[in-house]
Image (cartoon, rainbow, N blue to C red):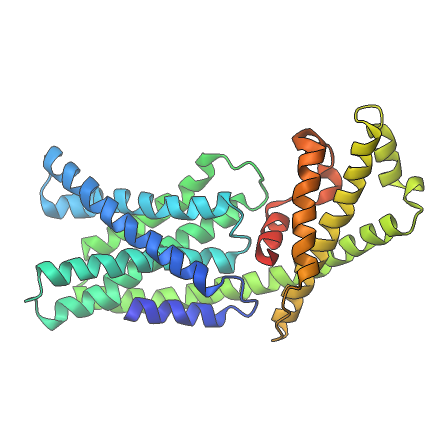
Length: 323
């Protein structure tokens, strides 16, 4: 219960409501599945390596478990479901919560006779540790990779090493278990609070700047005078590389992409102020039209338009949120 309550508090703290409850549930399930994978991998390695249980839990198990949990977060990054520090922290903690819940049920089944102190440490300490270190992995990875579209796998190593080291330190129990649990519960909340505060300020700034830029671009496209500006010169150059109908589709795609980006930022701004804006049928139809135009233009055409599409990871993430 403690780790799930902690996760609910994190969701409540997210003023933009970046992560849906259904997504969190699926991520918790994914975290639980990593527990099953870790059970078999750790069992194999424990038989294979000449280590006792204590050394194994300190130096090998953290590597296996944090790598498996980290793979879920990497998938969320690669599928543009994480855009800011807030959702990286929530998603990371959700993965760790799923891992911890399944692990604790297993221990409850195999060691149900253990005294209350064991369950206090496992519930308030080990479980929250699993969520916290995976959240830290997500936050560090988001910080290191947020400016990259094609992410070098090596960029995930700093966050992974931090999670492994913290997990290993916890398993060393350099303090008595209860004191170790209290220390973790004292240190983790302020760290996550600072992450949320920094992310909220950064997101507010990004929304204001990008909203103005998208609005100016859309005004230029709709004015009918775009031929005089950068867009017109760009499309004129494309006529030598693509057929006329494809160039027309490229202009339509640029307009549609910008409209959806504006719509997404508008929804997020309303959420910031406590309002919720439902997405109408017209917006859904625009997504369908955009998919059709992407097929018409082709990958080469989309790549050629990158300078005007503002296609960073945050921009793709905001379209995912809207969709």
